[in-house]
Amino acid sequence: MSDQRPIGIFDSGVGGLTVLKAIRERLPTESTIYVADLLHFPYGPRYQDEVRGFAIDIIRYLETRDVKLVVIACNTATAAALNHARELFEVPIVGVISPGAQAAVEATKNNRIGVISTEGTMRSQEYLHAIKELDPMVGVYQKACPELVDIVESGQADSRHAEQVLRRDLADIVQLGADTLVLGCTHYPLLKPAIDRVHPGAFQLIDSATTTADKVERHLDHSRLRGGGGQPRHEVLATSVPEQFDQVAANLFGEAIEAQEVRIWEASKT
Ligand code: DGL
Image 1 (cartoon, rainbow, N blue to C red):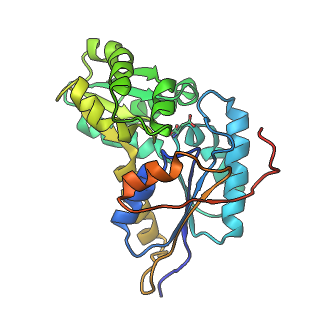
Image 2 (cartoon, rainbow, N blue to C red; image 1 turned 90 degrees about the vertical axis):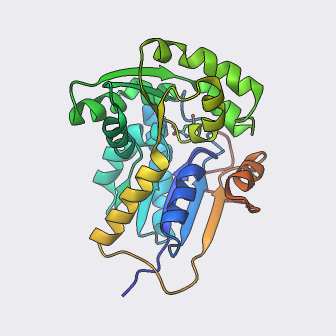
């Protein structure tokens, strides 16, 4: 018997669409509901408690939509809320940090890993712990790159401006000789072409999108939650009026994506 319920996925904005895309490619028969919390974007500079509160409310909403699994497609929210959310909810919840850490440890040849992320993810030290847990001998060099999030969210991931900011933000990690770079924010995979132009061949780039999709697949198989049979349905929702969102989403998916507004909180911006 297949389970036709959707998978719930959320992020603060367009970033989690990189995870959604990987999940849709890996699991083409599964239905999905994606929530972009544009009302509270960006999560990166906020206090962990605040981000945790948003994440819990979104998961509660997704539960009312009868999802069979939740993916926190945001590193900042994974760092702030994953453990707590697992204590609160029965629905299985997958985050993006441990799959990325695992892939990075498998990829590095010289045991030096750079991690770029939001301030919130960096402050949480979750990548450092996840990597050191897998291999304590690996050196981890972290850098918060908040400006890159705005660049991606505003649809400029492939621009000269993105290259300038990347050159500045990656300088220390390049100097420390890391051969592997974790894109520790789900917005950053959209910067891959610009990173390749700025530092061609310098790093193995690790994004959590494909590794998280692998994990979701294993989880569905293990828990016998696989869908299939019917035509999958995909909903993209945003907690405030999407502006650049639809365009970035359309570029990513190669098809028009129209986000619908969803009211999870009162209309006032928090
Ligand atoms: N995409 C989110 C992440 O992976 C962060 C972007 C933001 O600051 O809201 O951390």
